[in-house]
Length: 169
Image: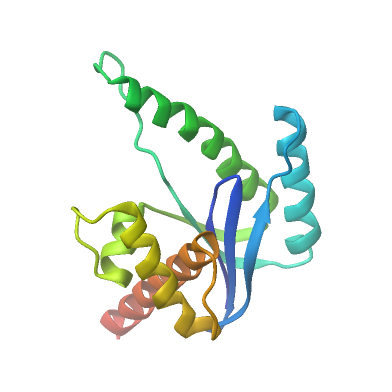
């Protein structure tokens, strides 16, 4: 089974797993260009790297919660939504470019609490450091935070899939 786990962002982390073992991981960074050109560049890079593969499961992080109509939001939330829009476009490019049998979307808090044993009140830097430490056991080196998150997203999915198979027996 081939699983691709992705932390979508302007510097997207990815991890490719085959039969529960990591076979490739890294980042794909969007070039600083005009907005539309950034997305075309990202699409080209994803196609070049993954188009020949048929992925059984694409596991991708869903970063930002939707803001509902008539909700009063702070300027900070508006900024997060705008950043979230760009990440949503990037997530859409990943999903559109990868030929996958199944797509699984996971919230950061879900995989972080399961794989990293994080608590809600931890600072982002603390969570990123833990993520890099945990991911290093998979790849034998200390990966960058985007790559580490993708590795841990994949580890979360594989653990969940294994639990499901065990419970079905």
